[in-house]
Length: 481
Image (cartoon, rainbow, N blue to C red; front, side):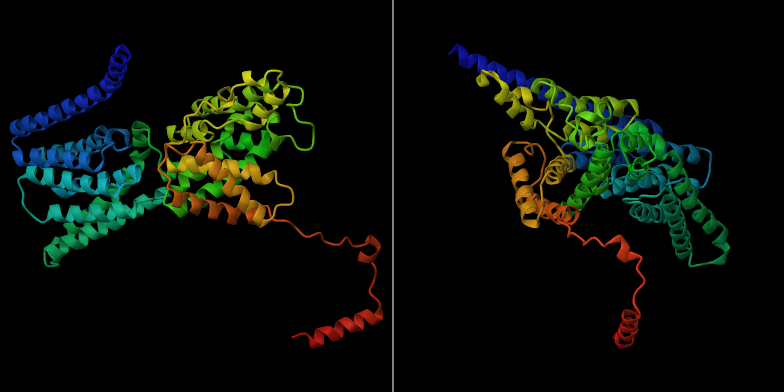
């Protein structure tokens, strides 16, 4: 009876943080809703606008249950929304025309930062309706800015170059100018205002490009543009990896290629996985000579060490990698690849050595030879874990053949699945089969067996061909198809 009470108490205590967190979320939502209604009342804005914004928040919470754990949590979205609406209110109060307001900047930033079309759409609708209502004008300008916002956000979706943002702004400006002239029956008298609409779109692109790094830092997010900058092999960490641990560097490149191809095949973020794979083993920079890929043909540094000491040296590269990532200010998204690329896997080689060398094998516990984790919690980190394991194992195979590689890849993926390393990510069994097929295709191309070319005698290479052979060669040329 007492035991049951203790269990019930434990269950209740485990629910308390979740309940309090949920309650806190409701308090913030109700307080925000009340603030929006009060502000609308005193600012003289139609209360329907405040109710509209509250409905948008409810809609977001409904479609994104884990809203606050995503890069586009309510605070981030509110900051972007307030940035554009505050600027709009300021211009309205000073009597400036509405077409001076950089409407397209907010949806462009949302599309680049969050990579979610729904979010950029909502950040196109909300500022247009609020500012249109605040200005007291019911005209076609709202529709023009709504259309240009959608077009500009689509143009920068998944963008990889900064100049593309300015080009997208220019295109949005052209669309705004054409739509404005269309709403005025293409009368030449409105050409000057149409020019302002064009410049408005261009300015939006320049603003979005200029303040993007600020929002990347504030929101702690990482864009495709930033990822490509991190892929530069002249960056400090990758340059050190290339010079100080060339084996690990080469291994990371192959893991990156495997991860990128696998992510493309299952709809994950391929670029993030590739760059995460480049940095996943940077912890090996501290003691590169203790890792097989950097040892070459010399004797292993672990021969003179006890299994427990070897285990600590190997497992410690995760902690040292995190320290380096923080020292060089890598994004938190890349730290996940360093921390999770082994999950809680067993360091099997040294575990077996410890069992063989121990007089009392029952005292050698498997838990002591497992990485601390956590397990991968995204598709991208899980795929890098699998790619890391299959690449390392395939490199150790003697005389690799397609059938050997096929068997090995399936065996490793099955073992990781059975060991529970993929429990916290949302990869399906179908995804795992697709990933295995991609791995086998790429690894078979890299580690295929090579034919032995016959060695030519040095004397024969420089020997002048005989006249007979020369005539035969000319004859062959004449009859060659």
